[in-house]
Structure formats: C-alpha cells, structure tokens
Length: 123
Image 1 (cartoon, rainbow, N blue to C red):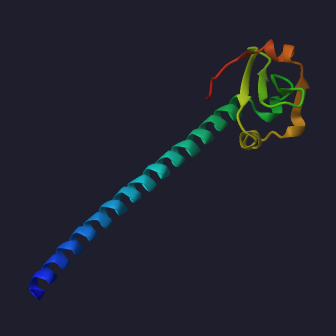
Image 2 (image 1 turned 45 degrees about the vertical axis):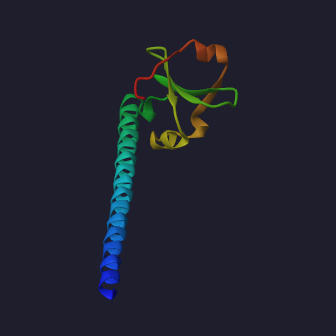
Image 3 (image 1 turned 30 degrees about the vertical axis):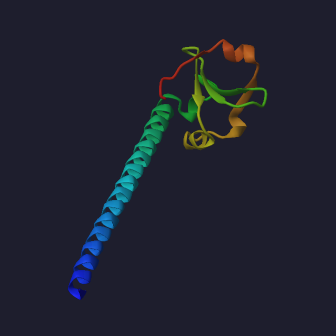
C-alpha cells in the first residue's frame, strides 16, 4: 500500500514538475519575444532619427526647413521649404534626439501648414 502511494506521489510530482517547466518555457519565450520587439523598436527609432538628422541638420534650420506647429497645438512638423513637404515629429524624445528643442518651433496658421503636403518618408 505504501509502495503504491509512493508511486502515485512520484507520478504526481513528475506531472507537476513537467507542467511547471512547460509554463516557465512559455514565460521565457514571451520575455524573449518582448525583448526582440523592444530591440526592433529602438533600432527603428535610431534609424529614423539618423535619417532625419542627415536630411535636416540643425545648421540648415531656417534655410532649407523650419520646425512648426499650429497655434500652441501639437503635433510639431518639419516643413521642408524645397519640396513643400511636412514631416511629423512623433515625440519630444525624437525632437531632442534630432538636437532641436521647443524654442526653435515656429507657430504658423493652419492655412500655412496645409500648403505643405504631409508625407511619411521615414515612418
């Protein structure tokens, strides 16, 4: 009788351990997927920022492009004077990563903003 209880206990132990290992495997796989996703997003952010920085260096501000927004509202745009395109700056983090700050943003009217075609070159 005790031998049968030990066998049942051992079987239960192996099943519980197997389920625990399976759940741990799923959890670690989920953590790995989140890490890969975060890494991709960070790399995408860096790539877009680098491309924007190359195309719109701070020393060309006012010459070939401007930073603008409409009457204290978001979003902030890069207004390309040559192509008449506007490019949305998606976050304050990107604005600072581009070496711009809020003091460089010019306020314009909606009509002026609408004279530029919105493009999604980098996003």
